[in-house]
Length: 183
Length: 274
Image (cartoon, rainbow over all chains, first blue to last red; front, side, top):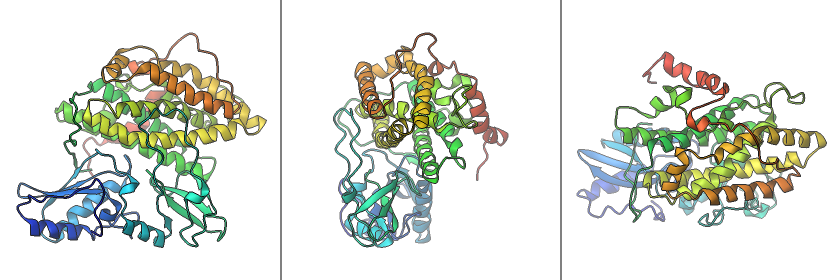
C-alpha cells in the first residue's frame, strides 16, 4: 500500500502469521477495480481488513454503492487472485462505517486523473445536522478537467456510466469527461 | 454475492433489533420503486436520463438487497434475499402505494403513451424528500445493522433528491406545457403521500427506533416548499378521502403486474444458479 487509509486500519499486529499477512496485502495490490482497471481495490479504499480465520483468511471489504454490480466481481477477483497464490480466503462485507470517496488514496486519485476521470472533490458538508434544504450543486471550479486542468467545466449529467460517476465537459478543451462523484 | 455481512463495528450504544416488518417495509419501498423506474431502461426521453433512472434503480435495489439480507439472516429459517423479493405475493408487500403506480396519470390527454416523465420525476422527488431525512434519523437508531444501511442509503437518497429536485424545477419553471404536466403529475400523486403520515403499526415501530415522525414531516414539507416555489408549482391542498394502504398490504391493481414481471423468471426456475 502506498499510504495508510484513514479509518481503514488493517493493523492486525497480533496476527499469528505476519509474513503471510504482508504477502496477502501485497497480492491485494494487484486486484484492480473491474470497471476502472487502473486503480487497485486498496487505492479505492474498499479493503478494510485482512485477518486469519480457521484454516484460511478473511478479507473484509466495504461496498461503494449499495447496488454497485462490481462488488461481487471484486469479491470473486480477490478470492481467485489469492487462490492462485495458494491462499484460501473468504470475502466478508462490512457496511459500517460507510465507504467514502475520501478513502481513495492520493496515488489512486493521481491514477484516476491520468486515466481521464476527474477524482472526487471533498464531500458535501457533513449531514449530521437536519437536512432541510438541498445544498447547491458544486461550483464548476470544483472539478478541474483531467486532460487540460482547466477549471472551466460544466456538469452535463448527474449520472454516468457507473454508479460512482457523473458526466462533465470541459469548456476550454471541449472534451467530455467522467467525474468520480464525492460520496 | 457470496459474502456475509460482518458484525458491525462497536457503536457504543445498546443494540436493539428493528422489527422484521419494518425492515421489510423499507426494503419493499426500495425494491418496488427501483423496479418501477427501471421501466425507463431503453425508453427514457434522453440518454442522460436513461442513465440516471438506471443508476437510481441500481441504488434502490441495492438498498433493498441489504435489507432483505438482514431480514433473512435474522429470521435464520433458511430464507435469503431472493425469498423476500421473488416469493412473496402482493398482499405481503409493505411498500407505499405511491411507489407502485405506473408512470402515467389516469386518462390524461397530454401524457405521451404510457410513460410520463413528469410522474417519474415528481414521484422520485416526493419519495427522496421523505427518505433522505428518514435515513438520516435511522442512521442514529439503536439497531446497528439498520443504522449502517441507513448511513449508506442516506448518501444515495440525497443524490436522488438533488437529481429529481433539479428536474422538478427545470420542468416546473419551464414552458407552459412542461409546467402543466408537472402540476398535473403533482396533483395526481399528492393524495398518495397521505400514506406517509397515516398511523399504523409501522409508525409505532419507527418511533420505537427513535424516529421523530413530527420532525420528519416538517422536514419533508420544508424540502417540498423550497423546491415547489422555485419550480413555480402549487402545493395541492391537503387531500381528502381515501388514504392508500399499501404499507399494510392493501395495494392497487398495479403492484400485481409489476411483481409478475419481476418474479416470473425466479418462479419458473426456483433455486436457479448462474
